[in-house]
Length: 214
Image 1 (cartoon, rainbow, N blue to C red):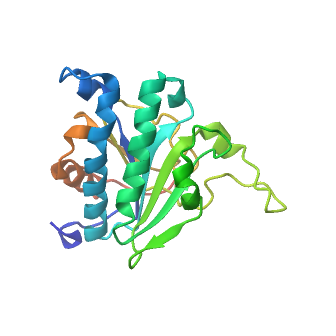
Image 2: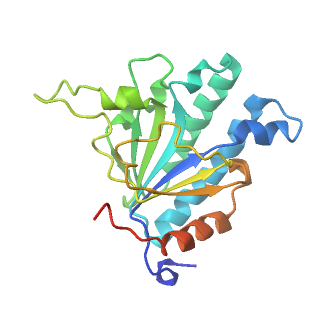
Image 3: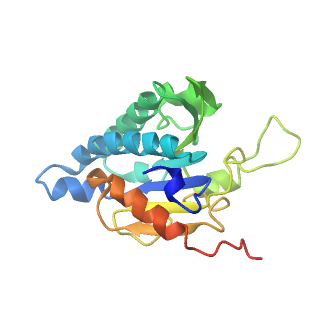
């Protein structure tokens, strides 16, 4: 399936890849083992985004609140985020990592990506929210400018948010950019990602009435 099969595609898709721990427990694994199974789905999804012409995608990595989880889980989702970003560097992409770098829970390996980096021929923008918090974002002060701005000012408005795992909430996901987003829920857990999940969301989205309040 390509972009010609859709009447209208979103320019920017937000991805909330939830359910890794529940997926692991359902298979007799420890909660921490679920995170590594979410890496391949993210890479596959980004490939599809690139193929069909999605201009920008934002992946929810982990939040500042998530770091309250047990240390073994924290270490595993940090490692999964680092590998996810690094995997995309071998593809045509433009990567930005956004999060609170002042904390030692922000992976130091990802510091170079806090300024957008182009790989290959560039193309689809891939944003990763890592050690991100909505309050940190909104009340961030850019010291390099004379005026205040939100930390996520380089990320555009989101047209469609897709959340795996069945939860009906945003969980603090980019509140400014999400203000007019359509929100599609997939009940399957993120490690069970299928291409059909995305196509179902896109077919649903093309029939939504996008007015942006007008």
